[in-house]
Image 1 (cartoon, rainbow, N blue to C red):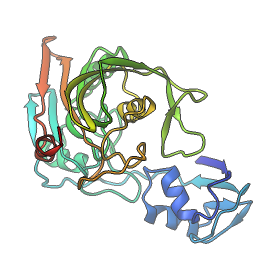
Image 2: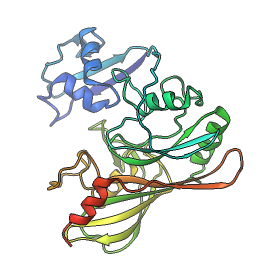
Image 3: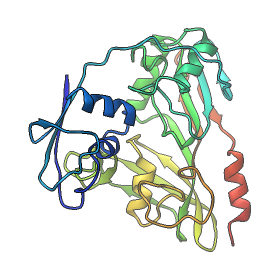
Image 4: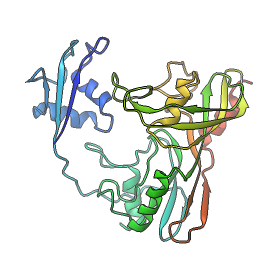
Length: 303
Protein backbone atom coordinates (compact mmCIF):
# COMPACT_ATOMS: atom_id res chain seq x y z
CA UNK A 1 0.00 0.00 0.00
CA UNK A 2 1.42 3.37 -1.05
CA UNK A 3 1.30 6.05 1.64
CA UNK A 4 1.34 9.77 0.95
CA UNK A 5 2.20 12.16 3.82
CA UNK A 6 2.15 15.95 3.69
CA UNK A 7 2.07 18.88 6.11
CA UNK A 8 0.00 21.89 5.16
CA UNK A 9 2.01 25.09 4.88
CA UNK A 10 1.08 28.78 4.83
CA UNK A 11 -1.12 29.68 1.88
CA UNK A 12 -2.54 26.16 1.57
CA UNK A 13 -5.01 26.45 4.44
CA UNK A 14 -8.77 26.92 3.96
CA UNK A 15 -8.67 24.54 0.98
CA UNK A 16 -11.15 21.64 0.95
CA UNK A 17 -9.48 18.32 1.79
CA UNK A 18 -10.70 16.52 -1.34
CA UNK A 19 -9.81 19.43 -3.63
CA UNK A 20 -6.30 19.72 -2.17
CA UNK A 21 -5.58 15.99 -2.62
CA UNK A 22 -6.96 16.13 -6.17
CA UNK A 23 -4.44 18.88 -7.00
CA UNK A 24 -1.60 17.12 -5.20
CA UNK A 25 -2.18 13.76 -6.93
CA UNK A 26 -3.65 14.66 -10.34
CA UNK A 27 -3.65 11.05 -11.62
CA UNK A 28 -6.49 10.25 -9.21
CA UNK A 29 -10.02 11.40 -9.98
CA UNK A 30 -11.93 13.59 -7.52
CA UNK A 31 -14.62 10.91 -7.17
CA UNK A 32 -12.04 8.25 -6.30
CA UNK A 33 -10.43 10.55 -3.71
CA UNK A 34 -13.80 11.25 -2.11
CA UNK A 35 -14.45 7.50 -1.89
CA UNK A 36 -11.08 7.01 -0.17
CA UNK A 37 -11.97 9.77 2.31
CA UNK A 38 -15.29 8.06 3.06
CA UNK A 39 -13.45 4.76 3.56
CA UNK A 40 -11.09 6.40 6.12
CA UNK A 41 -8.04 5.95 3.89
CA UNK A 42 -7.27 9.63 4.51
CA UNK A 43 -6.39 10.85 7.99
CA UNK A 44 -5.87 14.44 9.10
CA UNK A 45 -3.79 14.66 12.28
CA UNK A 46 -4.48 10.97 12.82
CA UNK A 47 -8.26 11.20 12.49
CA UNK A 48 -10.73 10.73 9.62
CA UNK A 49 -12.35 13.89 8.22
CA UNK A 50 -15.02 14.66 5.67
CA UNK A 51 -14.22 15.65 2.08
CA UNK A 52 -15.26 19.24 2.80
CA UNK A 53 -12.93 19.65 5.78
CA UNK A 54 -11.09 22.99 5.55
CA UNK A 55 -7.37 22.54 5.98
CA UNK A 56 -5.34 24.45 8.56
CA UNK A 57 -1.67 25.33 8.67
CA UNK A 58 0.41 22.44 10.10
CA UNK A 59 -2.33 19.85 9.49
CA UNK A 60 -0.71 16.51 8.66
CA UNK A 61 -2.42 14.55 5.90
CA UNK A 62 -1.76 10.82 5.60
CA UNK A 63 -3.31 9.20 2.54
CA UNK A 64 -2.99 5.41 2.44
CA UNK A 65 -3.77 4.69 -1.20
CA UNK A 66 -5.42 1.25 -1.45
CA UNK A 67 -3.65 -1.43 -3.42
CA UNK A 68 -4.66 -1.10 -7.05
CA UNK A 69 -6.86 -3.86 -8.35
CA UNK A 70 -6.21 -3.76 -12.06
CA UNK A 71 -9.59 -3.85 -13.79
CA UNK A 72 -10.31 -5.24 -17.20
CA UNK A 73 -9.90 -2.23 -19.46
CA UNK A 74 -12.54 -2.16 -22.18
CA UNK A 75 -11.73 -1.77 -25.86
CA UNK A 76 -13.63 1.25 -27.18
CA UNK A 77 -14.29 2.24 -30.79
CA UNK A 78 -12.69 5.69 -30.54
CA UNK A 79 -11.29 7.13 -33.81
CA UNK A 80 -7.49 7.34 -33.98
CA UNK A 81 -5.37 9.59 -36.19
CA UNK A 82 -2.66 7.09 -37.17
CA UNK A 83 0.53 8.62 -38.55
CA UNK A 84 2.52 5.39 -38.96
CA UNK A 85 1.85 1.69 -38.40
CA UNK A 86 3.48 -1.68 -39.00
CA UNK A 87 3.59 -5.01 -37.16
CA UNK A 88 5.79 -3.61 -34.34
CA UNK A 89 5.11 0.08 -33.96
CA UNK A 90 2.23 2.52 -34.08
CA UNK A 91 2.54 6.32 -34.01
CA UNK A 92 -0.65 8.21 -33.25
CA UNK A 93 -1.51 11.89 -33.34
CA UNK A 94 -3.10 12.38 -29.92
CA UNK A 95 -5.87 14.98 -29.80
CA UNK A 96 -6.27 17.64 -27.15
CA UNK A 97 -8.21 16.51 -24.10
CA UNK A 98 -7.45 12.78 -24.42
CA UNK A 99 -5.78 11.08 -21.45
CA UNK A 100 -3.11 8.57 -22.47
CA UNK A 101 -3.85 5.74 -20.03
CA UNK A 102 -6.49 4.87 -17.43
CA UNK A 103 -6.13 5.80 -13.76
CA UNK A 104 -8.27 5.02 -10.70
CA UNK A 105 -11.71 6.48 -11.22
CA UNK A 106 -11.02 7.16 -14.91
CA UNK A 107 -11.15 3.98 -16.99
CA UNK A 108 -12.92 5.10 -20.15
CA UNK A 109 -12.22 7.34 -23.14
CA UNK A 110 -8.43 7.09 -22.92
CA UNK A 111 -5.93 6.41 -25.67
CA UNK A 112 -5.44 2.91 -24.25
CA UNK A 113 -9.17 2.15 -24.64
CA UNK A 114 -8.91 3.20 -28.29
CA UNK A 115 -5.71 1.22 -28.86
CA UNK A 116 -7.19 -1.98 -27.47
CA UNK A 117 -9.99 -1.74 -30.04
CA UNK A 118 -7.75 -0.82 -32.97
CA UNK A 119 -4.99 -3.34 -32.24
CA UNK A 120 -7.32 -6.15 -31.11
CA UNK A 121 -5.26 -6.52 -27.93
CA UNK A 122 -1.94 -6.92 -29.78
CA UNK A 123 0.06 -4.54 -27.60
CA UNK A 124 3.17 -4.87 -25.44
CA UNK A 125 2.37 -6.02 -21.91
CA UNK A 126 5.42 -4.79 -19.99
CA UNK A 127 3.56 -1.91 -18.32
CA UNK A 128 0.58 -4.02 -17.27
CA UNK A 129 -3.09 -3.93 -18.22
CA UNK A 130 -3.50 -0.22 -17.49
CA UNK A 131 -0.73 0.83 -19.90
CA UNK A 132 -0.51 -1.75 -22.69
CA UNK A 133 1.74 -0.55 -25.48
CA UNK A 134 2.58 2.71 -23.72
CA UNK A 135 6.28 3.58 -23.50
CA UNK A 136 5.98 7.35 -22.98
CA UNK A 137 3.19 9.87 -22.57
CA UNK A 138 2.23 13.45 -23.30
CA UNK A 139 -0.08 15.62 -21.22
CA UNK A 140 -3.85 15.49 -21.68
CA UNK A 141 -3.99 18.95 -23.28
CA UNK A 142 -0.82 18.52 -25.36
CA UNK A 143 -1.41 17.24 -28.88
CA UNK A 144 0.78 15.32 -31.26
CA UNK A 145 2.90 12.27 -31.96
CA UNK A 146 3.12 9.36 -29.54
CA UNK A 147 4.84 5.99 -30.05
CA UNK A 148 2.92 2.83 -29.18
CA UNK A 149 4.54 -0.63 -29.14
CA UNK A 150 2.71 -3.77 -30.29
CA UNK A 151 5.05 -6.31 -28.69
CA UNK A 152 7.56 -6.54 -25.85
CA UNK A 153 10.59 -6.67 -28.13
CA UNK A 154 9.68 -3.34 -29.69
CA UNK A 155 8.82 -1.95 -26.26
CA UNK A 156 12.25 -2.78 -24.82
CA UNK A 157 14.01 -1.29 -27.85
CA UNK A 158 12.13 2.02 -27.66
CA UNK A 159 12.60 2.25 -23.89
CA UNK A 160 16.35 1.81 -24.40
CA UNK A 161 16.37 4.69 -26.88
CA UNK A 162 14.41 6.86 -24.47
CA UNK A 163 16.95 6.17 -21.72
CA UNK A 164 19.80 7.04 -24.11
CA UNK A 165 18.00 10.27 -25.13
CA UNK A 166 18.48 9.24 -28.77
CA UNK A 167 14.84 9.66 -29.84
CA UNK A 168 14.13 12.83 -31.81
CA UNK A 169 11.41 14.92 -30.19
CA UNK A 170 10.57 18.34 -31.58
CA UNK A 171 7.60 20.31 -30.29
CA UNK A 172 5.88 23.50 -31.42
CA UNK A 173 4.67 26.01 -28.85
CA UNK A 174 3.41 29.57 -28.57
CA UNK A 175 4.85 31.31 -25.53
CA UNK A 176 4.23 34.62 -23.80
CA UNK A 177 6.64 37.44 -24.52
CA UNK A 178 9.01 38.16 -27.39
CA UNK A 179 12.11 35.95 -27.45
CA UNK A 180 15.02 37.62 -29.19
CA UNK A 181 17.17 34.57 -29.99
CA UNK A 182 17.39 30.81 -29.76
CA UNK A 183 18.71 29.29 -26.57
CA UNK A 184 19.04 26.33 -24.23
CA UNK A 185 17.49 25.71 -20.83
CA UNK A 186 19.64 23.35 -18.78
CA UNK A 187 17.91 23.05 -15.41
CA UNK A 188 17.06 19.92 -13.37
CA UNK A 189 13.34 19.28 -12.83
CA UNK A 190 11.69 17.72 -9.80
CA UNK A 191 8.39 17.64 -7.94
CA UNK A 192 7.49 21.01 -6.41
CA UNK A 193 7.54 20.38 -2.64
CA UNK A 194 4.81 22.97 -2.02
CA UNK A 195 2.41 22.06 -4.84
CA UNK A 196 2.68 18.40 -5.78
CA UNK A 197 0.68 18.70 -9.00
CA UNK A 198 3.47 20.94 -10.31
CA UNK A 199 7.05 20.32 -11.31
CA UNK A 200 9.78 22.90 -10.70
CA UNK A 201 13.40 23.71 -11.45
CA UNK A 202 16.01 23.97 -8.71
CA UNK A 203 14.38 21.59 -6.25
CA UNK A 204 16.11 18.91 -4.21
CA UNK A 205 16.33 15.62 -6.05
CA UNK A 206 15.60 17.15 -9.45
CA UNK A 207 16.63 15.13 -12.51
CA UNK A 208 18.76 16.58 -15.33
CA UNK A 209 16.67 18.24 -18.03
CA UNK A 210 17.76 19.95 -21.25
CA UNK A 211 15.54 21.86 -23.70
CA UNK A 212 16.70 23.64 -26.87
CA UNK A 213 14.39 26.31 -28.28
CA UNK A 214 14.43 28.08 -31.65
CA UNK A 215 12.37 31.11 -32.69
CA UNK A 216 10.10 30.43 -35.67
CA UNK A 217 8.07 33.67 -35.67
CA UNK A 218 7.69 36.71 -33.41
CA UNK A 219 4.38 38.41 -32.70
CA UNK A 220 3.60 41.59 -30.81
CA UNK A 221 3.24 39.83 -27.45
CA UNK A 222 4.07 36.19 -28.20
CA UNK A 223 6.70 34.00 -29.83
CA UNK A 224 6.17 30.86 -31.90
CA UNK A 225 8.99 28.43 -31.07
CA UNK A 226 10.26 24.95 -31.75
CA UNK A 227 11.51 23.09 -28.67
CA UNK A 228 13.80 20.11 -29.00
CA UNK A 229 14.04 17.76 -26.04
CA UNK A 230 17.22 15.96 -25.01
CA UNK A 231 15.47 14.58 -21.93
CA UNK A 232 11.82 13.82 -21.30
CA UNK A 233 10.90 14.97 -17.82
CA UNK A 234 7.30 15.50 -16.75
CA UNK A 235 6.02 18.87 -18.07
CA UNK A 236 9.58 19.65 -19.22
CA UNK A 237 8.85 22.27 -21.88
CA UNK A 238 6.15 23.93 -19.81
CA UNK A 239 8.40 24.14 -16.75
CA UNK A 240 11.52 25.23 -18.62
CA UNK A 241 9.84 27.97 -20.68
CA UNK A 242 8.08 29.31 -17.59
CA UNK A 243 11.40 29.32 -15.72
CA UNK A 244 12.90 31.78 -18.25
CA UNK A 245 9.87 34.06 -18.17
CA UNK A 246 8.13 32.76 -21.31
CA UNK A 247 5.37 30.37 -20.17
CA UNK A 248 3.37 28.50 -22.80
CA UNK A 249 0.22 30.32 -23.87
CA UNK A 250 -2.85 28.72 -22.28
CA UNK A 251 -0.91 26.87 -19.58
CA UNK A 252 -3.17 26.88 -16.53
CA UNK A 253 -0.53 25.43 -14.20
CA UNK A 254 2.74 27.23 -14.93
CA UNK A 255 1.55 30.59 -16.23
CA UNK A 256 0.03 33.52 -14.37
CA UNK A 257 -0.42 35.46 -17.62
CA UNK A 258 -3.96 36.20 -18.74
CA UNK A 259 -5.04 34.44 -21.92
CA UNK A 260 -7.29 36.56 -24.20
CA UNK A 261 -8.06 33.59 -26.47
CA UNK A 262 -10.44 30.68 -25.98
CA UNK A 263 -8.08 27.79 -25.38
CA UNK A 264 -8.33 24.42 -23.70
CA UNK A 265 -4.97 24.14 -22.01
CA UNK A 266 -1.50 24.88 -23.29
CA UNK A 267 -0.62 25.56 -26.95
CA UNK A 268 1.91 22.75 -27.15
CA UNK A 269 2.19 20.18 -29.94
CA UNK A 270 4.51 17.17 -30.26
CA UNK A 271 5.19 17.66 -33.95
CA UNK A 272 8.11 15.37 -34.84
CA UNK A 273 9.20 12.07 -33.38
CA UNK A 274 12.06 9.99 -34.74
CA UNK A 275 13.47 6.63 -33.67
CA UNK A 276 15.46 3.63 -34.84
CA UNK A 277 12.99 0.92 -35.80
CA UNK A 278 13.39 -2.08 -33.47
CA UNK A 279 13.08 -4.64 -36.31
CA UNK A 280 14.63 -3.00 -39.39
CA UNK A 281 17.10 -0.75 -37.52
CA UNK A 282 16.22 1.99 -40.03
CA UNK A 283 15.64 5.52 -38.77
CA UNK A 284 11.94 6.45 -38.88
CA UNK A 285 10.74 10.03 -38.50
CA UNK A 286 7.06 10.95 -38.27
CA UNK A 287 5.46 14.41 -38.37
CA UNK A 288 2.11 15.27 -36.81
CA UNK A 289 0.51 18.29 -38.55
CA UNK A 290 -0.45 21.22 -36.38
CA UNK A 291 -4.03 20.95 -35.09
CA UNK A 292 -6.58 23.37 -36.53
CA UNK A 293 -6.89 25.45 -33.36
CA UNK A 294 -3.13 26.04 -33.40
CA UNK A 295 -2.96 27.15 -37.04
CA UNK A 296 -5.97 29.44 -36.58
CA UNK A 297 -4.29 31.03 -33.56
CA UNK A 298 -1.12 31.71 -35.55
CA UNK A 299 -3.25 33.52 -38.13
CA UNK A 300 -4.98 35.85 -35.64
CA UNK A 301 -2.15 36.72 -33.26
CA UNK A 302 -1.32 40.45 -33.69
CA UNK A 303 2.01 41.07 -35.37
